[in-house]
Image (cartoon, rainbow, N blue to C red; front, side, top):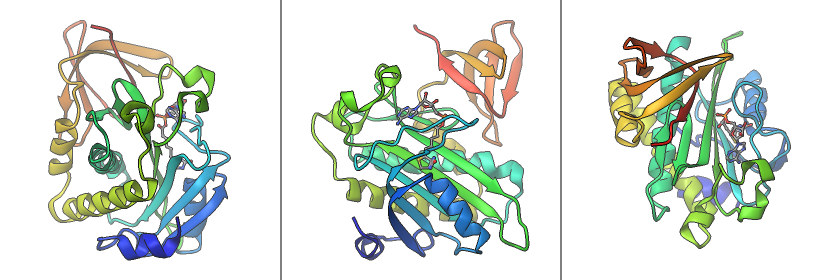
Length: 261
Ligand code: BT5
């Protein structure tokens, strides 16, 4: 996998304006942030073969097995206010699930706010980070991690029941380079559509790729949990829940656990 092959095979307007491929990094999001501080290009993509400190949300870690996963981050500089950033997480989810589904025998589905599940197990995670403008060097770092060619034993024990890879579910390996190109091409299409047409189409596509609505969930925020039925997304992309005590509540963040049927 090298920079030229990726750049020459992209069909994008913005994403991949510059591409950097690295062997091992701490976190592609952190590398991207360091590039942002140096005033990097809008659309710059960082791709790594492995991460020593892959990050999830809330200081959690993203297990990044070398060579078998996809670890990439994109710098974006949209002129939007910080409260619109959660919509970019949804946008990344739509792009990633569309790309993954071109390579998956079973369709992967989205779980709010940032997970892609395949047969109920986590295949992919998205981490969008906002870097406030300092001397105009601010922007958004959109990080995507996908489990591609992992065997079951390559996940740590505590993830074996909850994580999966495309190879595990398809029964054969997937071409990582082709999947990276597909993710970046889909991201570019979704992002251009978002800049031109706003978030409603992103929210609609997100809902079309999810089957969590109508299901009973437990939504956890810190130490508080709310049980209820996931109803849909509102016009900002927040999760609407009909709580067990009959109120409609809207959440802009949290951890969703799907209850067993
Ligand atoms: C996420 O966080 O799902 C966001 C993951 C984003 C990773 C990408 S890789 C490229 C870029 N650079 C980075 O440093 N990060 C981004 P969250 O929703 O907080 O989920 C984290 C939780 O998922 C962990 O606490 C584990 O339970 C689980 N997990 C960790 N690694 C996993 C893996 N490889 N596959 C499935 N589940 C995993």
